[in-house]
Amino acid sequence: MAVARSRSVALLGLRGEIVEIEADLAAGVPGFMLIGLADTALAEARERVRSACQNSGLDLPAKRITINLSPAALPKHGSAFDLGIALAALAAAGVVPAASVARAVHLGELGLDGRVRPGSGVLPAVLAAKRAGSAVVMVPEANAHEAELVDGIEVIPVASLRAAAIRHGAELEPDPFDPEPARPAVPAAPPPVPELGEVVGNRDAVDALVIAAAGGHHLLLVGPPGAGKTMLASRLPGILPPLDVEAAIEVASIRSLSGVPIERLPQTVPFEAPHHTASPASIIGGGSMAIRPGAVARAAHGVLFLDECPEFSRVTLDALRQPLESGTIVVQRANLVASFPADFQLVLAANPCPCGFHGTDRCSCTPMMQRRYLGRLSGPLLDRIDIQLRVPRLTSAQLRLGRDPERAITTAAARERVAGARQRAQTRLEGSGFRRNAEVPGPWLRGISGGRRLPRRTTAVLDDALERGRLTMRGYDRVLRVAWTIADLAERPEPGPDEVGRAIGLRMAVAA
Image 1 (cartoon, rainbow, N blue to C red):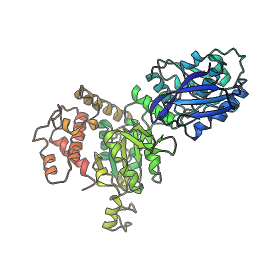
Image 2: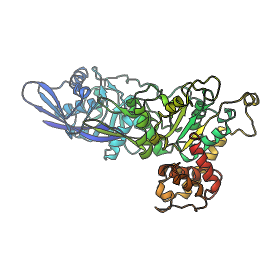
Image 3: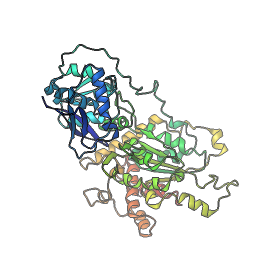
Image 4: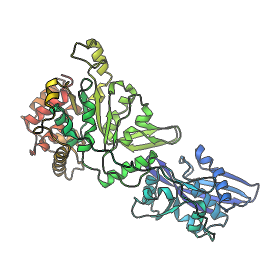
C-alpha cells in the first residue's frame, strides 16, 4: 500500500485536536520528510523513528518516505507523535495491517532501541480522543493507569514499537521489553491536613477563613510577621469540600500536562504557593514552543496563595485580574492560543509596611513608605478581593492561654459548616447555573436577571457607601456575595442589615 494513515493528538492547553498522520512511500532517492507545521522536537522524529524501526527488526524500505500531519495549519509540538508516525510508515510498507493502524489513536515517544517512553499530557490527550469519537488509543505502558481513568475508550498499553506492531496484527515473534518506568505518581505517605484548631487567637481571621471557604471568596490578609497569615492560608484547603469528578479530571489533566504522573483522580483541592521571585510566565503559563500551565492553572479548583504579595512584580499581580473575573487564563503566542481553567481562590498575604513592624517602636517606615508598599497592589486588583482583613499581632496573654477548646473550631467542624453553607447556596441557586455565591453576577444579586433583590432597609448602609464613593460597583456586588455567604453559614433565608454590615467591615478592614 502506497499511503497509510494513523492518528494522534495535538494539545493546545487542555484542548486536544485529532491529527491525521499520512505516510507515503514513493520511488526516488531514499529519505524521510516530515511536513505539517512541526516544532523542533517533532521534526527530530525522523531519526528516532528510523532507528527505532531498525532496532526493532522492522526495517523501513529504502524509499522516499513522506509523513504529513493534518491539518497542516495546526501547530504541533512534542514527541508523542513518534509512535503514530512509525506505525503509519510501517503500514504503508505493508509490515503491519493498515486498517488496524488507521482505527487507533497513538501516543508515545520512541527510544532509539524501539522502547516506547512515557510522556506528559496523556490524560487530556485521551479525553480529546474520546470526544472526537475514537474507540481505541495506544499509549506507553507506563502511562496506562493515567489513560484508563477515561471511561468508554479501549486503552492498549505497549512497551515497545515491536509490541505495538504485534498488537496491530503483524506476524512477528514477541521481543520482551521491560517497560520504561514512570516517576512515582504520589508520595509514599500523603501530607497530613493542617489542623485549623491549632490557630491561637485571631478568632476574626478564622471566621473570615470559613466565610471565604463557604462562598469561594478571595482573601487578603495584612499583618505583621508571625501573626499567622501563612498558617491560616495553609489551612484553607483542608476545610474546602473534596473535588467532584469533573473538577478532579480537570485537575488531573493539568497535572499531567505539567509532567506529573497520574494514577488516580485527586480528591483534595490543589494548593499552589509560588515564591515572590517567580516570573510572570511561571505564574500565568507559557513557553517558547509548547505552552505549559502556570501556577494559576495548577491552582484551578483550589487555592493560589501569594505570600509577601507586594514583593511580586506589578506585571505578575495585574495579570491575575482577568482570570479572577473570567475563571480562565488565555495564553497567546504568535502562532497559537491556549486556554486553561483558572477557577481558583486567591489568598494574598502582606506585611503592613516594608519592615513589617508597623505600630511598634521597631518600625522606622514613614507613612509614605507604608502607602507605597501596599500601593504595589493596584486598585483594580484589590477591587476583586472580597475579604480584606487585618491580622493583629498575638499578645503574650494569648500565647500563655493557648488554644481555647471551647471557642476553637477544628478543621472537621469548619469543613462541615462550609459544606452545609454551600449546600444551602446550591439549593437557593438551583436552576441559575451557579453553585457558589462568589460565582453569582451582580445583576442577579440586584434582582435584574431573575435573582432575589434585598430590601432597601437591608442595603441602606451599602447604598450609602456606594454614593460616597467608598465602594465601586464591583465592590458593591462583592459585598452582597459575602453577605449571602454569612447568611448561609448562619442558616438564614437571606442576609439582613447585620450580615450586610459585617460584609462591609470585612471588605474595608484594610482600608480603615
